[in-house]
Amino acid sequence: MIPRQNDHLLGHKKEYAYFQQAIAKNKLHHAWLISGDEGIGKATFVYHLVRLILGQSPAAISRIKAGSHADLLVVGRRIDEKKNRLRSEILMDDIKAVGEFLRLTPAEGGWRIVVIEDADLMNRNAANSLLKLLEEPPKGALLFLITTHPSRLLPTILSRCRKMILHGLSVEEMEQGLSVLNPQLSKTDQSKAIQMADGSLGKALQLLESGHLNIKDIVETLFNQPLKGKEIYKQADLILQKENGFSIFLDLITEAITARIRKAVQEHKNEFGYPMRSISQWIEIWQTLLKWHKEAESFNLDKKQTLISELNLVSEL
Image (cartoon, rainbow, N blue to C red):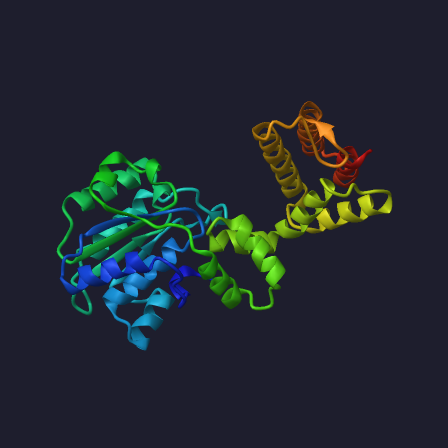
């Protein structure tokens, strides 16, 4: 769901209350850097603040959702018309529009708000152009910079913004969000997604859409019940049916081996898995999996046959 169209604000209650008080006291700083992990609702949070400031009437909310509110400008990566794809950067022309917008008189009184999504993707010229606006902001200007990577921004930009770090959602908030956005989801899959997502609702949804959970089940099975015969071919087909399943399997199996090696070392154990293997044997398997995957992708080899070989390698007694 597009963040500015999302009516459900999950978590971040303390931070939202802070802005409520600042607005009520008319003590709102002109520039804010809102940061936090990917998928935890940073943009949704900001657009709910926009509603709080520009108006919460149905008409105002409708215009905000549509991106047609006269006192709101949203800046982000635009489509490169020549290449017909999203640009990798925010350009100076995009920020130039910010200056022109902020010099206008507010259409409905009060603030004129600029939201810069993925602010860390501004190129050097765009960032320097924004810096001038932050140094001498027009009256009634309010800027929200949203980023997952604040360290990529110019130090001078960071120094001119008030900073607010948002944190991951609680299990209860994750359950609430998944129940709204994916009401058909089983409790078992919901629990698995929440466990893997580290408080990121966006990550949980990606896990569900990509087939991560199904592939993770296959990986977990490999350490407890080795696959045999036709079952190996069946699981290879299931993995390849998922978008990017080939790469996802490698990520999950190598992560699982690494986690188990770390745990074995901490517990002073020399072996783990089924069949039981020494840590050095698991390291060799880990290296072989990486080698086979790289060869399959580099030389365009049969991915199904590569998966079958990998499943056999981990399962063989």
